[in-house]
Length: 277
Image 1 (cartoon, helix red, strand yellow):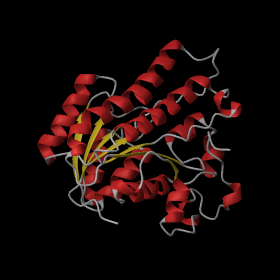
Image 2 (cartoon, helix red, strand yellow):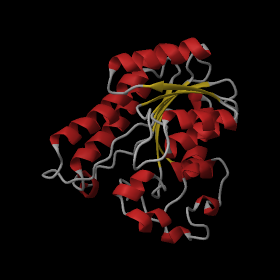
Image 3 (cartoon, one colour):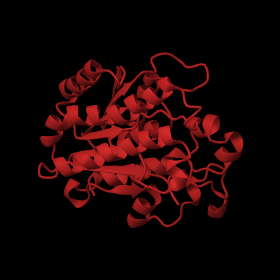
Image 4 (cartoon, one colour):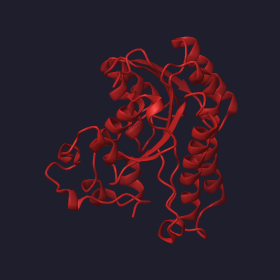
């Protein structure tokens, strides 16, 4: 396994939560992290901005390039890719972290929110990845990693929140398509999803509040798994829908107790994440 020293990551989002945890793990190696995110000013209900995230990345030992922009805007995507290339000399890894969640049923889902999820989750993943392909082709170990689930076609998940399910599965389909299309160019593209809920603002605000937060794992488990994926040879694994815990087990991690949001919580008391049977 190599390290990320001197490697350049282009990430959508990342001001907080899982994206920031992944960025901080990479920063400990001395990675360069360009972040395309909207959070320029403090949010009244959410911690962190792109600027506070950049500060934490630098403190952790990495180089940070905060790029205020919207992954729905093609000009912002182009600017992010060109700015990252200009600042760091190329792009080695794209992490599609930006995502909108709304678990409303079909009759309750607002049309604007449906469009937002499609634009950020699906279109954003495809367009950001596509824009970086020329730079990725020049990298020694190019990776695309999307934070999205396996394509579980069980009616349990298809029907639970159809709009959100389509948006998350769209992220996965875009990634798997790029994996197939650019396999000959040596660009790896995979997805990554956890078996349990992760203690983030989304879980706190949308998936069950304090009760589910207490039965979740920390974002660091996602970050450690992502690190294992993007430091592996691109030729070793592509076109796969990976599970966080499986990746870590394959890397030799057998004890996940240190990732419990509430220390001492047994594994059988953790809350299972959606999309996995």
